[in-house]
Length: 366
Image 1: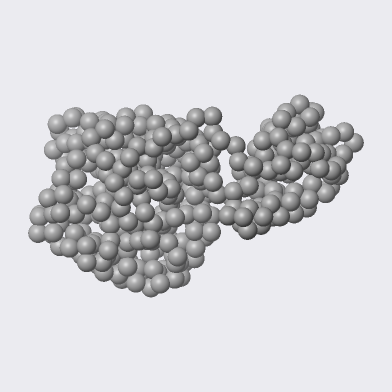
Image 2: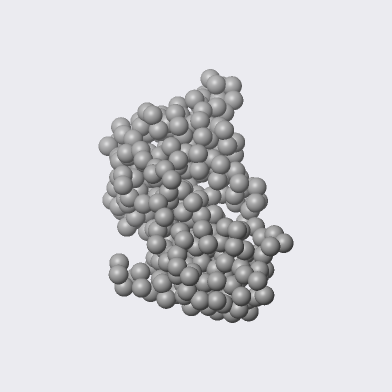
């Protein structure tokens, strides 16, 4: 049972590019990505973290390549992961060339910071020869000096001018397999910059609020910023920047997309905040269920409501529902219909069993 969002979001039409086997833009699903925080030269640790990020639902993972040893490490890393790797490059054009030659499927660069046209040409030649895309990564904290002097401070117009300048550099080299970002740690600045950029280019946009902060504050800032843009149909791939473990970024990113009806992956839980009317401990139950159901990738909706005030109504709109009742007798709903009473101590086991069963049925019918 899938519930359509109240408002269908009409996505802005963009060009389609390839990041390895992941297509970005057009009608393709909005991809979610994160970035490792291990030393890239620690190949084993980096591979393990990438796999943890992927298990949480990432489509693309970025790694930092500050030196030659890091770019050389990519050769072994890409052999042991299942998603395209983006190499994060700053300033040194040789690192970009090495990354492309060692298996990166995207280079995060600012072409204007790479150097003269000869160096840019060499980087883009390496990208073309190795089926490697590019992300033009404009950031409010690292704008070109002349643009800062012109606008006096980071502003939407400054970020967009930088983006258009870098777009022109790539187009002049007949390179078109790229996406663009205009990030800032300021929510309002980011939203305004992306909205302006979306009006003047049809290249796919990578969304993010950079340096958003800790898990709670960063998740809120990212939800406001990215949610506003996504509701406008802007955005083809996203990254949530948190001062936390990278897999947490994927959790938040997927939840933002699921809440907007832009991605269906895994179990979507509708739960109440709990109150004195609850027939069982809702908060503890939801926490346990989130962990026990994290392995399920098939879209399933689940409602966990502590009492009969909203429980039956929510259950009518979800695949599986539990509504709290008196004396430990709670009602299980399947596809919106009352099924059986479930004792409080049996809720976890029963719900996990029913969700797994539903996921299996949906997989067979897909």
